[in-house]
Image 1 (cartoon, rainbow, N blue to C red):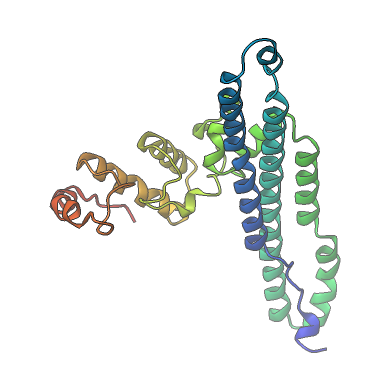
Image 2: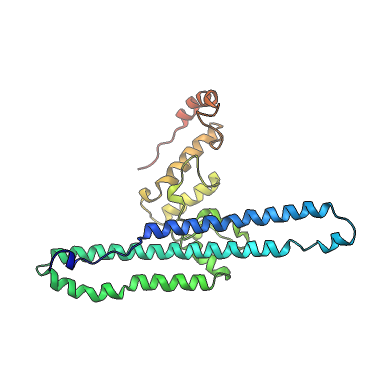
Length: 263
């Protein structure tokens, strides 16, 4: 039996690919929030041009559209969050497969070890558990507890927090950091304020995470803090697009305030 015949295959697509798909689903779902606002605004403008009895009948004309937009938004967010959780299960399973393969190759009798591990591999309990959880989340997409649970698990990006103001989603309640935090940068901090960045940083430390796992958050917090003290708006500031003079003016101040980021 060749080495290939005693190697357990990883699950494909892998967790990273599935997680990327989940992020795309959530990104599309959040657009319904803006659509709902656009519908309400357009309706308000149209109603202002109508007088008399027809205006009364137009009172709730936009309700159906805004309600549907809200429904699609919530369903999309839950599906994306559940898919992201499932992606973690895939990653965990593939890591286990890698450990099993290492055991097989190190065994005196690789074929025998392969046969011994095969039932566990085929049972794939980690994947099955992740699948059951994801299906349950999706089936209960309209329950507030589902959104709260996904948020607590860090399966939803920080960007969805403002979409559910009534649910009281808090950074202090996170068991894991949201999926978009690792990719933060000073010029693309997903609309998070300095206070919110600080709250996320505090939570990451409380969870005892490796700083490498939230390096983007760490850098973004300290650079944003220094920029605020220097009077620089990172969203507007830059050495291009006609802002070179402003950049030179502030560079010295920013250098003096540059923080030492813990390693």
